[in-house]
Amino acid sequence: MSESTKTTSNEAENGNKSKPLLAEVISREQYLNALEIIDNYHRQNSTVVSKPIFKSMFNLKKGDFVECKKIHQQSTNTITLGKKYEVVEVSEQDSYRELFYIIDDKGNRRSYFCKNSQFSAV
Image 1: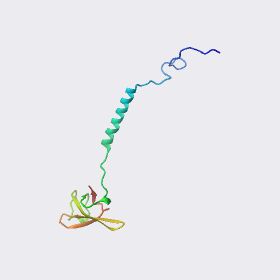
Image 2: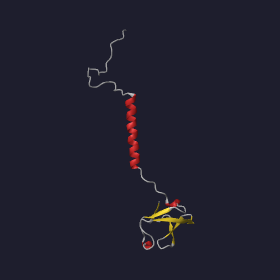
Image 3: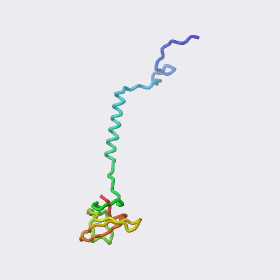
Image 4: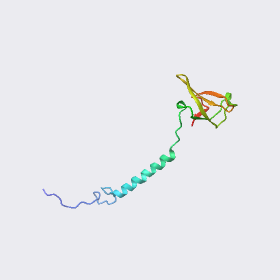
């Protein structure tokens, strides 16, 4: 048995040079450059898409601030939409109801449940 010593070429069987059998190889420099471009793309998108993280109303402490986002009918004359109020006290009425206290626009101390939809923590 004799083995062929014929040199092989990167061609398909019937001499078709348009479809090479081996993929083109890129250099390490080209590869690292492509990785840098992809990394920059992801960093750019992460800074653009990131949203602010809001503090939970259930983690309020004395000295924190809450912002009035909407006004319920019973609060129309005591708080102002968009105004920030300092939390002067936080307490638990029972295990399911946490309260926070603010000083309203008339100078009165008022309590609100932490789940109250009028406020958001800032």
